[in-house]
Image (cartoon, rainbow, N blue to C red):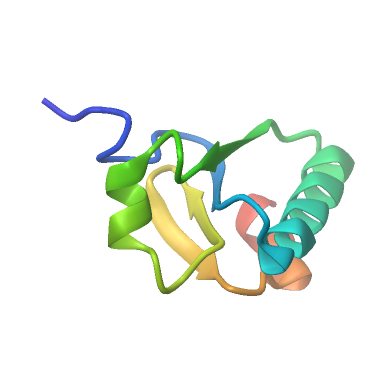
Length: 85
């Protein structure tokens, strides 16, 4: 059985870490695109999901859509729009 630290779960999930400037930029992009498209999303910190934090430590922030890694480091706004359309 998976725990919350094993999988980001369904929907749009942004995996971040505290005090990360790339995470702040990614959060802004995801929030803006999701709001414009009427899509719910959630942010998950590595402090809440240490298993994911260890697995993706060199790629943060990481964007998941329905549990699949779709982007990391810098979230491409145009690509995100296509993925959520």
